Length: 199
Image (cartoon, rainbow, N blue to C red; front, side, top):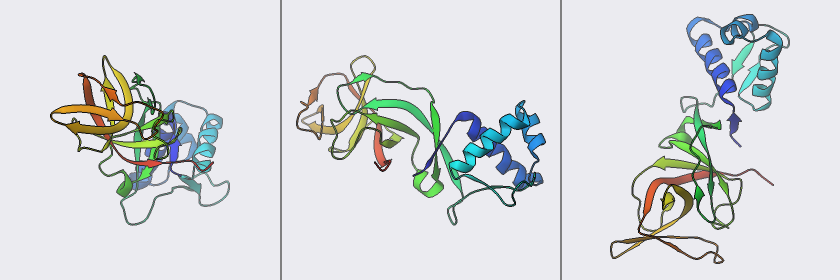
């Protein structure tokens, strides 16, 4: 499972990685001073990064023993913004602000612009509530593609796109949900992958 990072955690990880590359591993004090926090506050952030598997300490207790965990052969890790939640159900107002970041291998993240967290059950069994959806920004998609679409005045949903005779509609995978037919469907993204927490 990829790591979900807060904005502060991502900033700290980026600072450590850049410092290691440019001038060597920074001390706790240097990192804390850079972000205007206490060393104690920094240690809590570092512990969270360790727990998420993106940071490790080469020697216990050493002040300059931080190492950024990266994958081999693909150029490292990429932090993708999680832009809120999208309903896999009845469309609701789309929320588009950065809640967190999802840290992915660069090869997996290629072609992905942002992440949404799925809610609802209209796309079961393909998409479950709580899945992280990897989305590429597009304005159109092929017939049958799973898309993020706005319906009406800014409502957002994830569904299968259907096209016929210059008409668009959205279909759920769950047969309990009726197709969404509207003159104002606009595709804003295509789901190109997902990550799921094991239950």
